[in-house]
Image 1: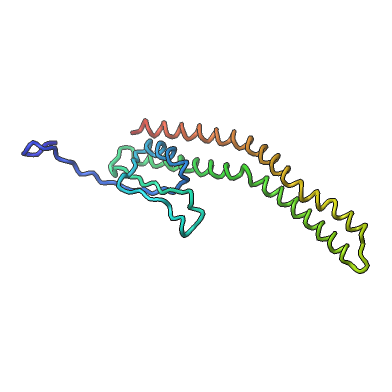
Image 2 (image 1 turned 90 degrees about the vertical axis):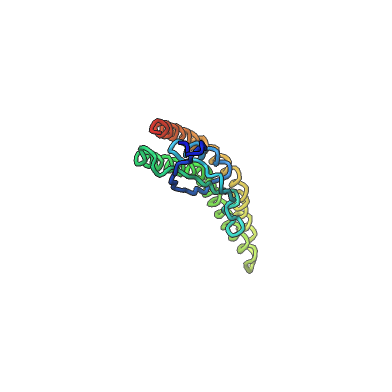
Length: 185
């Protein structure tokens, strides 16, 4: 539109705003995804998540987005966006699951090894010392301290392989959701 002086007249646009806290290595992926639901990056705001108060936010960034309030197909886009966000959260959970089982197995074996070492220590410090019992208990104790490394590596590799297939399926689902959202725009 033009005003009386021939200058371009700017139309009013009401925006809704959204903040997303995410890992810094996921920001580009999220921007690409949210654009398919009508969101655009709000270039006026840029900040790093507050890592000073909470160390869990050290690698996090806050993504500021805005979208026209009068966007066409807003309800369907919002539904698809929720599916997208649910898939992103599931991917995060699957990424964490790659090592959680391995960690638990390794810790369990390490704690059992420590229990055997405690028994060996009590056997040698008893009055009179039970050296043979100490040796018998020390052998599984040392094995219980050495094995966790190998258990962790093996279990983590197995879980990573299994989780990577599930993560790829989730990415395929995300791309299908984004494609539907893009068609609605």
